[in-house]
Length: 104
Image (cartoon, rainbow, N blue to C red; front, top):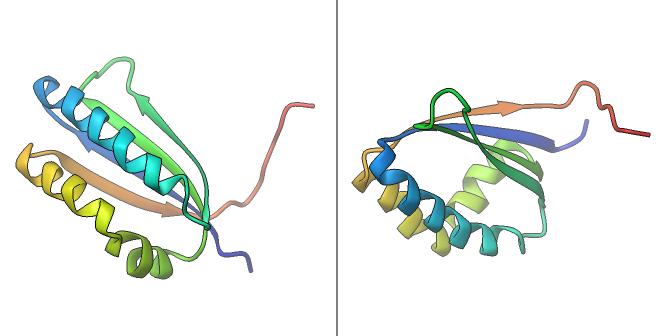
């Protein structure tokens, strides 16, 4: 079985917090993109609810190793503090791939 995982995190925040959140997230992903097990990520906004933002991340590791290794990285500390300070609601979910489709 592959250790490839998809992490989807939904964030709910006040409109006033969004710019700071996105800026800090871009900073964090400059570090994340260098991680050996990182594959890809996308940041999307709900078109009907601008206070709802979703991150889609793909990693070549297990949820356990992600939590133990990736979440303990020093560059994540300020980002984690900002989520609390701005009162951003975060709902993570882990997924495993059961099928893939790509454009020919």
